[in-house]
Image (cartoon, rainbow, N blue to C red; front, side, top):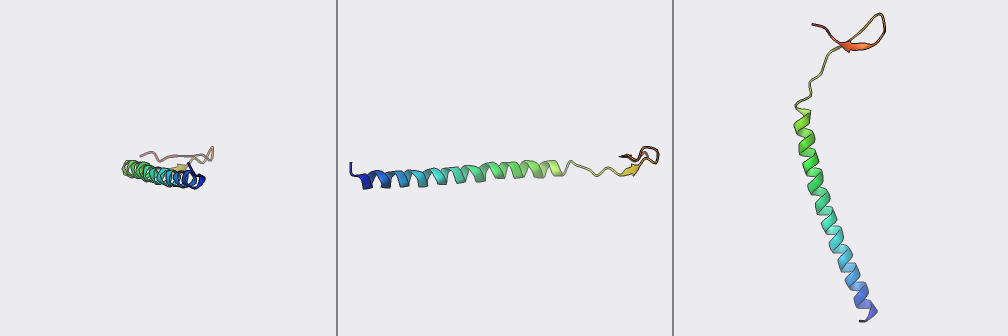
Length: 62
């Protein structure tokens, strides 16, 4: 087989592999974005107040 055909087939294979990897990356990132968006709605802000004795911040009582 002539060397230019081997190089051409290698380049074609590399391009196809790059396309598959890019599509898979977009698919996985989309799934992660949907998952993060669903978790963001569950989180609620907890008001904190400073404990004057220790100086630590703790959830507000009441």
